[in-house]
Amino acid sequence: MNMRRLAALLAMVLFALAAAPATAGTVYVTLAMNATIGGEAYETVLTVTNPSEEDKSFTSNFILGATDGADREEGEEYPETTIPAGSTRILTGLIPEGSTGLLEITGDPELLIRATLQRDRGSAPGAEVPVVTSDNVVPALTDVYLKGIRKDGNRTSGLGIANLSNESINCRIDAETAAGGVLTNTRPVSLQPLSMLYTSDFLAWIGNQSGADVIAVVRCSGESFPFAHVLNRQSGAVAAIDPATSLDSRLIPPGVQLPCPPGAVCFERQGIFHEPSGSNPAFKTNIPLEPGVTYRSIRVQLTFRHGGWFGPLQDGIHNFFWIFDRDWAGTYGYMNARGPNRNIVTMLTKAGLSGTDTSRPKVNFGLSPGSTYVVDYLYDLNSGNIEGTVSTPNGTVVARLFDVTRASAIGRSGALTLWVGNPDERSKGAFEVPSLGWDYSNLRIEVSP
Image (cartoon, helix red, strand yellow):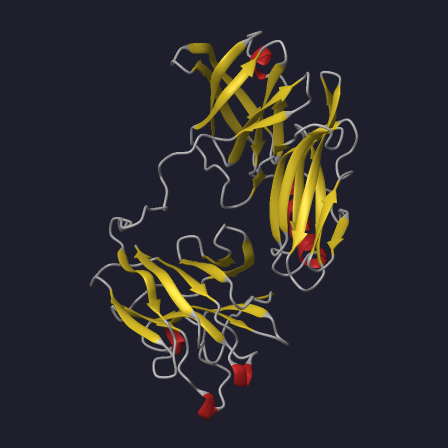
């Protein structure tokens, strides 16, 4: 990396620290367009929801087409937009007129982002534009299949590749028929750092003036996101073409147990496994680990139904789970929420920190009694990252927390302890309170090498 780019990247980091929240996240809208195709005007429209009880903001940075998006001026500032608490805003005008490229969004992780490509700001049905995060970016050297590309008297198909890495990448594009016939020889392309290659007529681009049910196969040397869509020139409607989905899925039908990954230790309790009560406020179990195995990650997943805040101390700490080795000093994960007057969700770790030090990221969000939530927590020494999310059953993330690992290993004692719910500590005056009336279900823990 040359010194100019290094300086630019450092400037980006410093600006992000100064201008964005400490826990800011970044996503990329892959097809940021405000341009004319076939005589029709199309624009990418952003819908942003703020489910929290405080105003939240984000900055937007438009990166033009095939330009180097990582090459930035020192101290460069980006427009900021504030979304009031509990509201949704439909935003246009974020993309310069006549332009196509990437839209970089950085802001509070609680904000929910959706993008659509529309003709004349919604006069015809629009289509979802992929919003790329660390969860759905396509890893290097992965084949992506885009099925349903076509061109006829009324329709054309556009195709794009977003380079989400800070370095140049090389990609290859193959086109074939649904029956497996080859339409064109491999087409190599190069993309600059943080850039986007886009053609509004893919079949013409590869030398074919018509075709139906064509499959484009894209493979890149770095992190990317290929995408495609079909434009109906007569109606102006847009139909998205998402990457084909594999059967590599963690969803399971009723009565079937998800297999444990090779070398991992798994612990599972399907259905309701704990209903806190005065006589049984906390669920506690040990998870033995294989001797001599070096474990590098812990994943905890569970569902809970919020049965109401603890009456004597509603803003007390209501525990989702606590997983640790031996004692408090070996805490790899602890997620909880506090109710009225606080309305926060907290993620805490202690393992690898000295003395009384702990790390406890928080987000402002008030859980709703009577609602059901899904918790997903990953402590990963391989990446050095920790991420905890709380979602609704339909997948909407209401709280997302990030941190970094400090431990050098997992499970030195040969076992982990899991604690769900808190004991009744009222007599001790502690902030931890029992979650009476709640129920916890569908617990799964994976401890992997």
